[in-house]
Length: 318
Image 1 (cartoon, helix red, strand yellow):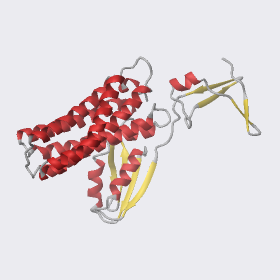
Image 2 (tube, one colour):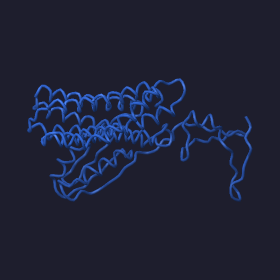
Image 3 (cartoon, one colour):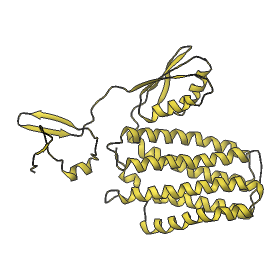
Image 4 (tube, helix red, strand yellow):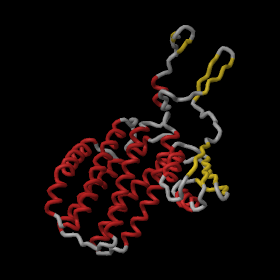
């Protein structure tokens, strides 16, 4: 294979990389390659360049300030391996302890009265990414099923337990976002995957809100509300099926039809439903619209996957 040497500027010579090779190895703008000189030969390789652990520090002013969570989540999702936190109030450490439980693979390894060091103590999660994203999706569907069953059986006390599933799902979601960010220059369709995972988090949040509001309300569903919930459940189950085994014709037909349903029918249902069901309608409608957005991302991911793969999972390579 021959490549013509081009000039950029006044003194820089460049050659282009074979498009088939760059596509197979997910080489994009900003990707790093190892370059090795051996006599009259230059070898390009995609072996990862080893780097030191990324470290970040920040200060928390108040023990109940939401900034502690935002800073921790930011540092985790951006790929930092060590997070040093300083604070004035010892109570802040209790808040940090709770938040660290949501960071898969991270532990507090050192603490003083006014500081702590949080570190990644686990092996890289990259190889587990397909399993993590699949589990997060499964849990979102499972939460929806369990909530509907709780309403049908009038077992409202179980809604409190179901809402706790969102904490586990959130842990998986944040881990997925960390992996995507860490591999942003080599993962296929990283932007769509990041959006996809973020939407999953939004759906689970709506299920959590339903649990939190109705666990003490003990409001039974009438026939219309039960059917509306079942319609939403069918929608997210179809999305999960599309994520694993994609059928373009079926996806386009179902996606357009259900997108119109959620956009057009919410107001009509709100007018007809009982007052105590209005919040449930809003949460289900928001979750349903999120699922429609989710299916858009699934469509994009599947349309760009390599030939010979059946679904998004098969095409995820990190």
